[in-house]
Image (cartoon, rainbow, N blue to C red; front, side, top):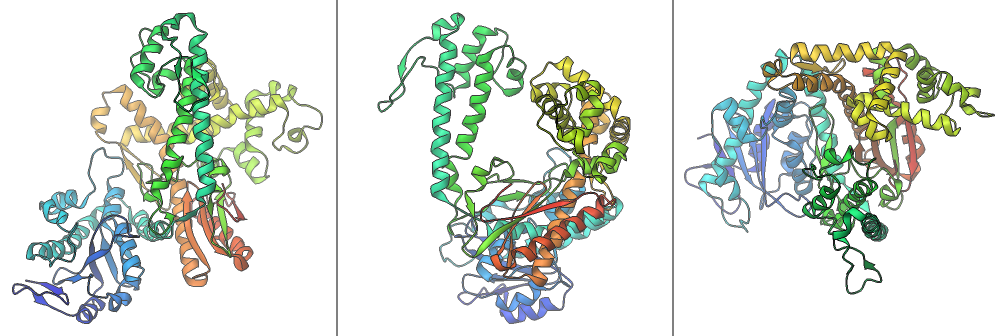
Length: 624
């Protein structure tokens, strides 16, 4: 049996023992190793790594890390010449760094690679159990995995040791099965991008953000108060509507409240709210957002309810409940999902990608004493990608001459209406910059919504909701827009046709990420689904190229920190096209300049015309 067990407290007759030094010497001679860990739980800040498994197809070492120091393996983990295969590497990376004080380099993540290979496929399954079944026709024993929880120092069983060793062996075999598929679909560059980026994402998750709890607590109370005020507003609207008379039932808010509510409707109960709204709209089936949006301009009560739900959601997600995400080290550590269908990133527990853009929330996250935030984001990233892909002369000219793109577009779309809206000393008329003329502002907002909506395949219904206009008005506006920008229309139509014809779409060079459209053959006979494929084919290359760019920037920035700014700069967050670092105050100006250069270097790999620029700022708190 090729398993070697390393422990100070137990030995098994059936399994050969070894020392940590022997393990290190063996691993140093290999080019590819499989690695896995077993832990007490999911929170690396307080749950310990209790077992580490490492090895190749011939020999697997199982290390009892409750008693064995893995320091002799530092050279192996930090080596850029030895490939370390993980499955969901971020999890293991953080535990190895926290409890072994070792950072891992040159990672191959079978989980990420599988997501790259099968991006877009519905319910495909990317867990290790799915991969071992898919590639090796082996069923993992979940019961053994669960036995590692709450061991409390008990010796490992033979079954647990073999289970840990087999995970390493399986990773080696899975990679061998994945490699031909990567080459077949020309995904080598995007696989390399994601395997490099997983180190940067791991570091961000590991580092976390410090939070000013008092400041956040005050915000939470404000949100709670505003949400309660909304319920009073909703009550008033019910009371003023004769059709809703049966709901006029005054009730005390609570024993400490100074106001009496005028109805007993629980606005957080979909069942109760539906009964109210069905009095106005008998055919209404539920109070889901999509069903209500088309009525919000017709009924003030429904519009107020939608606003209430938005405020209530904010109060719940980013109120006092947020404190549950503070870990044992006093910081907030998010968890990234590194690859969505478009290649973009999401995060959870907590969701830092959707934290309100309002700086009053972001300013609650603070830098340590002697450190500052240095944050950089791209100027109109997705619009630059659209301009580059479509080669639209208006977009390109505006970007080349540092003009306000939304205003330039609005002038073309609205023509005489735009020109007649000018006021004296209009900033646009003087230098084609954003201006505060009231009519210009309204027209610019409409076109801005289309400009940004292009990246998400926005249609008339969504535009109508966004601008609070009628659907036919939204359709006319989109028609005007594409009449003014035929090259953008042609570019998007080309993408849509490609996806419908081939069953997949790709992002821009050099990464050429591929998104599959699941059950595409079936969709050829389903017009509604074909329409969805067309929309996704239009937005995936735009969003995906933007995501590729940001991940490349993360990699360049991380490498620069490692080589020249170690212990002076740290990666702490990324949200969409923004990357956030903290650095020592004395190097902030120097780092700001270098970070800007690296962001733009990444941009030039995809948008090769050099027009996409980065804005970088220094602040004491996190900012947008």
